[in-house]
Length: 230
Image 1: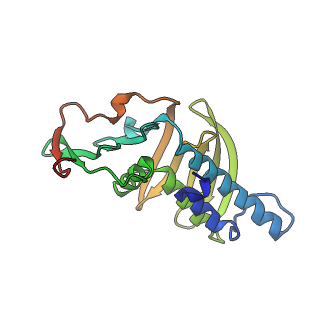
Image 2 (image 1 turned 90 degrees about the vertical axis):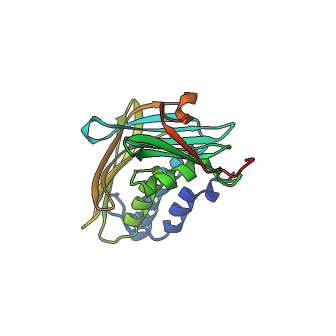
């Protein structure tokens, strides 16, 4: 599928001609706009390609907690697990697990439409739970790039053994720092989500996934809301 058809690429393309970001060396407005657009487009292209990959990524959260993202192909399936919650999308079902009365309960519903990317569905649902996702970071970066008052600087680093590009955004109300690895995985994010401080950092990345990543948490209760016969 062409990269331009995905949500991440669409976000970047919409801003290509409008970027007004400082922090890049340039001699005139045209050169400055092109250089700044390249930053956003490069990160969008990496995240876009990552939607087609098989990988698992573990993240460090404040307080010693962890989060986990898994994505596989053939068949396409995706999962996002964080303290107290888990979302899984496969060809058979969409499963949302969370605390209920002192224990974990998983609600199983019908899978998304056949042409839907499991990773996009999982990321959208995870965002509604207040979790940080690659599409969310790309949206924040693009919004900042369209803000004339924003100051954005780029740097390179190594995260969990992978080279990564970092972007530091300074705005009046929404300053943040985000890093994306060469493979397109979210390397780190420090900022605010819905007004709350958030910090995540990649600690482990593998180009393979354990099948257990898509299973229900041990001992979880189950509520199956799929239509009969599905």
